[in-house]
Length: 290
View 1 (cartoon, rainbow, N blue to C red):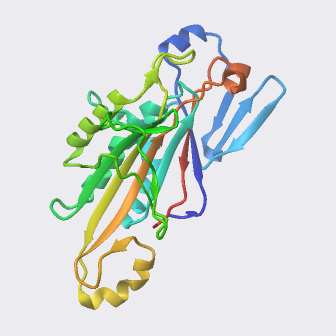
View 2: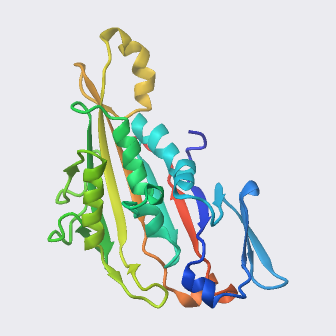
View 3: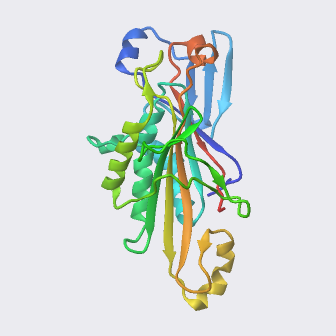
């Protein structure tokens, strides 16, 4: 991938739902999207506007597949499967479709599948049964407490940092080996059922916690002894473990984060320009192989 040294940001506007179409029959959009220019124009009133530039801009007609392939798939396929760690975060106001875009299972319609399911599908498709391992943990951060969504009895989970390697770990969190995509969908469904939600002023079923999916991939690297010198340069950029013996294993981690939606009405553009600014922001953090 190019331009890995900075956070990349994509914006997506969701379509109005049935209730909004009725309430906002005479609604004039305060947001003007310019996908070809990668810009979003915010019209505050008839004479004032502001323009913002993103790495990607998606209109309300953009499909789940299109957003995933343009924003997330490069992180999964080109980076995580090559031994790097990658992170994707969804940020936005309550009701902007973050959880739908990130965690939708799509059991009845595969076209509706969200980022988590699509990412695991790509990861599993690139692994070899028997030699490679894909494991997941699913957490929520609620009221400054880390809780295990796959084992809800585990609460107030501590965060440990290795003083020597500076590696951060959550030793009490459940780590489940994924068998196939159906198995992962079942785990995701369990986690979503345990996630804290509430009826708010802006959303009748709003997720009130940050949800974090951690995907750990370990892939065997078959390498002949004569190829070791040739691969040394590549090893500098990859997360490889193992001694001089063969085989070697490439480790990587993917984090997909669904941030809780903002409910700060007094600070929201949604109130000043319309009843709705259904904008989700996707943050792609710089890659790392630590």
